[in-house]
Every structure is written in C-alpha cells, then in structure tokens.
Image (cartoon, rainbow, N blue to C red; front, side, top):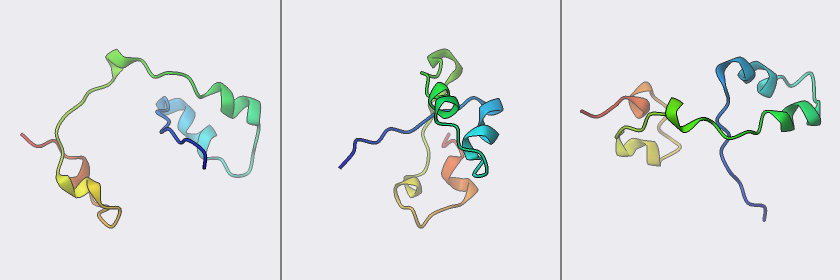
Length: 64
C-alpha cells in the first residue's frame, strides 16, 4: 500500500491538475509544492465531514 497525502493547489493550477486530456508527469509533479502556511486558515466544521456520504455545503461552513 502506498502512503497518500492530500494536495493543496493554488487556484490557477486547479485546471491543469484536473485536465484528463493532457498528462504531463513533469508538469504535474511541479505542482506538488508546499502551500504557504500564512495563506491557510483553520476553523471548526461540522462532524458531518467525517462521512463520505455527506457532500453538502454545510460540511465546509465554519461553526461559530
């Protein structure tokens, strides 16, 4: 089994990453760079995110 890690992409790289018509392993590999921590924001969300059957906007809403 391989180790897996999520990828955080910059907005302008999302189309490249999801393009199924073009596969350039060097280009895709170049997108796998650490995302700047100061651009991230953490906040509490609903426990509903723990189940893949829940795919609703409420899963990403901040709990205040």
